[in-house]
Image (cartoon, rainbow, N blue to C red):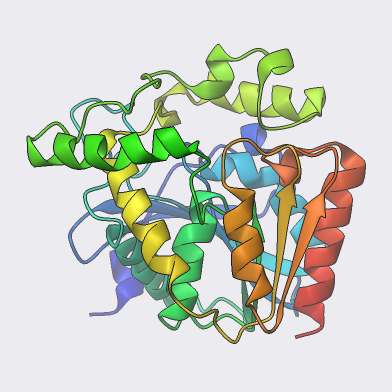
Amino acid sequence: MNYSSLMVDAPFFPQVAEGPASVDAYWVKTEDDVRLRVARWHGESSPKGTVFVFQGRTENIEKYGRTAEALHNSGYVVFAIDWRGQGLSDRLTDNPMTGHIGQFSDYQKDVAAMIKAAEALDLPKPWYLIGHSLGACVGLRAIIDGLPVSACAFTAPLWGVNLSTIQRLAAWPLSWAAQFVGKGHSYAPGTRGESYVLQTAFEDNRLTHDPEMYQYYVNISEQLVDQQIGGPSMGWLFQTLKETRSLSKMPSPDTPCITFCGVEDSIVAISAAQDRMARWPQGKLELVENARHDVLCEVPSIRNEVLARISELFSST
């Protein structure tokens, strides 16, 4: 059966996303029958290629509207996904606010469905990847497993969770035990079922120094309440600890790569990015001064420079 015949139009909210007007969204199904939402921002009649966007935990496609606008202006088609358990894709627990995953490898089923959709839509090649936070972890595994992209860029990669030594020693047995006794869906300690940006004042946020971009994110969250999720589950934490440890032992792929980490990032382990990029033959790490976790939502000077460097890499491969 032609995969395109299985793709049904899905809702998208361009007025909230503030991205290119030429956008369409679709429902796609994974091999384990999870319904996901993907969206395509069209490019020029002869585009430079397609940029796949792998979002971070808690995010939705609309949040990348402004990033898609910048990439569109640079000549690229943009193709984004809501991971299972977030955005408008199927939720995995009775509580829709819980950020959960059964097995971390389930994200690769989402990637496989996205690739099938890209092929059905005949998205122009070469293909490239931008992965943020969780999306960088999923993306690294996908590239190692053969994702056909010519180059990749990662921001704030979740290749290690930022935990103190004591927290890390406690996180492993606690999260394992929660899964073992059937409590893997419960929230990880210190988290709850509320949208981060809707419960955190700009002055206290860990994402950006730019009040206008933070308000953009708040506006999206307020207008698309049903797309929000809260804290991660104990199961998500355990699976992520397992995956990041497994990835840390693997060699880097032979794919041109640039990675950006905000020096003030308190969410992911910058040391894990430094270790990875130090052994990435065609890779480069940029530590961004005066930047927090989300460099694509930072002040204009940072955001524009990061996007320019990414476009430069993609154009050269």
